[in-house]
Image (cartoon, rainbow over all chains, first blue to last red; front, side):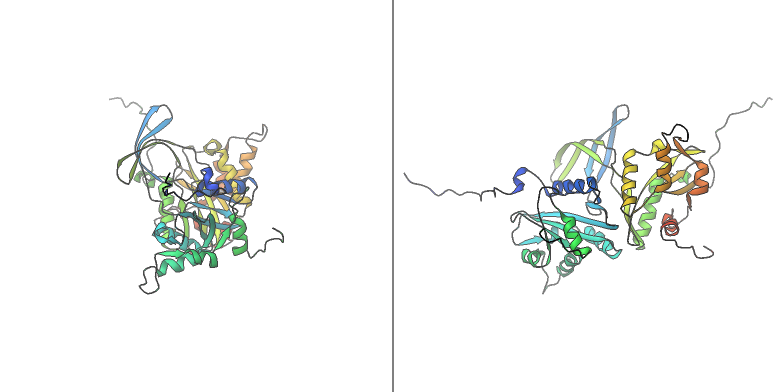
Length: 199
Length: 199
């Protein structure tokens, strides 16, 4: 009996929480709920903007939207307050192993984060490299540096290399509660707070 | 010929901009656009939350929502950053002349504003008394005082008297650009800044 080689997809990593069907957005929302319940921060996801075209009123006091379309958000998905500071970020995932494509980010999101940064807010992205099972906090200035360079013919590229994340971005641990403790990383970067030993 | 008395509605005030079909929300949005364009503040209205039930795909890349319902917002309508500070508020209108009913405000909005206030943010309501053509900024602590008292049998009431607005809230001028310069009032209350003479 001949054993033919069988092409397989790479098996999913057993320890990867992605198996649980969670998305980055769900993980961040769960973390935000944890932060709110423990009175650590007040951070919410903004609703997805929808352009409503038609509404019917089949029952009293209950409007039924019968035609609507998703709109492009003009800002980022998450904002709120933490330790007296305004905080604002978006979350992006990539299936690539070697880089995060800049086309995942809309120009108005860059403009928004830039304005927030200039007004004294904490502005960043949370990036999930799905194939690595890794999460990073990417502060706005580093993102901006790559964004501005992308159309430079000599030094520009249309993505931020994974290596740059390893060297210059900030890993976020995936855990139980909160799932993505990104505020611990915010403490370190924006409040110059050292982690207690042994943590 | 006998002139019978005719019951009339009070005529609309000629100078009232409400005649232009503007709503309070539109006026605040226009002011926020002005603040953003002049790099004074970054404040946005959050999209109205919608529960999407059914989506169809009549054309490539264009999802059409065919069944959806409005959800009760879990926070306030407006937030952003101003002078390094997190700012968060909602806007309410009333047709009453003598008071603003507290039932216009949802309990989760009070809880949200309370949390923002405790985390060091600037939290308030903008109230429009339509019959007076007047706008007020009502800081959260004053709102909270009346909210907590409302179920008190002796001193409680289910509204905030107009007189309290005249005595203790802060009038916002209606103008041309920006239409509702509420940040000028924020300067005075939260940044102890005096207005320049003659303004």
